[in-house]
Amino acid sequence: MSDSVRTGSRLVVWLFAAIGLIAALAIIYIAAMVFSFTVRNRQDPAQIEAKAAKQVFAVAGVNALAGTDLNEIVIATDASIQGRGDPYSSGGSRPDERNVILLDKANGESRKLLPDNGRQIVERLYLPAVAGPTDEDADNFVVSEAGAKDGEAKKTKPPVAYYLMQVRAAEGQSRDVLIGNLATGQQAFVLKGIDGVDRIWMQSPTRVALLLRQGRKLQYRAIEIPQLKVVVAHPVEID
Image (cartoon, rainbow, N blue to C red; front, side, top):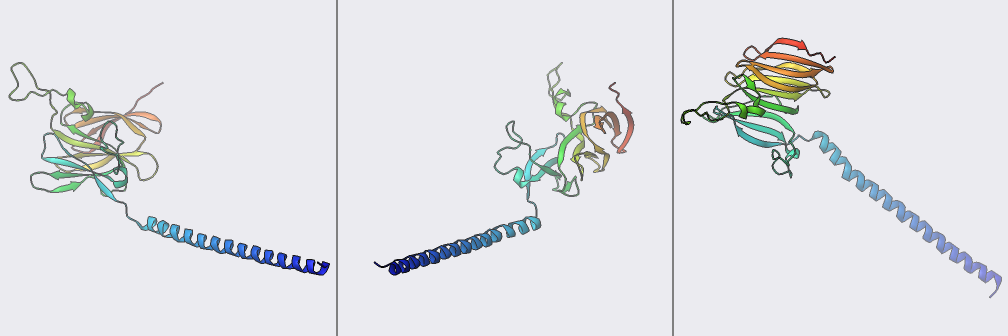
């Protein structure tokens, strides 16, 4: 075979190789563009939808309030409840509570304690009109009941009369404290911007006391519930 023929054959091979390479690059480029377009189409609607979507809420629990005709209906974010079993069991995680509705079992009337579901409830307590420990220690209250044997007192929870809720502040990690009267429906945020509450107890049938932290200082506050007013405020010195 002559040199000219060999050279021509090589040129043909190189030409086909170059065409094949260009075709492969073109296919890769087209595939990349299609993939990029597909990814954008898959992501963009989700982002738009996420911004416009409304949050979904669900009932986290319905509980009778001792000594009253009221049930509390706890409202939480749906995502914090789904797939977690009983959120209030010992092994369950606490749901993201956003509101409480009080339902009168006798007439069906209801009222919500927070104006909207925008803030997280950190803690909620129901307090009796009796001096003593808070609801978390309510089994320590001893009330005599008709039907108890002579010389004995049946240990039972007294009727609740008030409620206290710690709610996450609108901005930051501080908390606001809401106190209300179950009978009258009157309530108010009596403390705002605190760091946390360490202890709560009923000082008298109408007064609740709190040991709290505010601005990294330990503080004592006493609140007269019918007036929804702080009546005693003292720092607690630790040095």
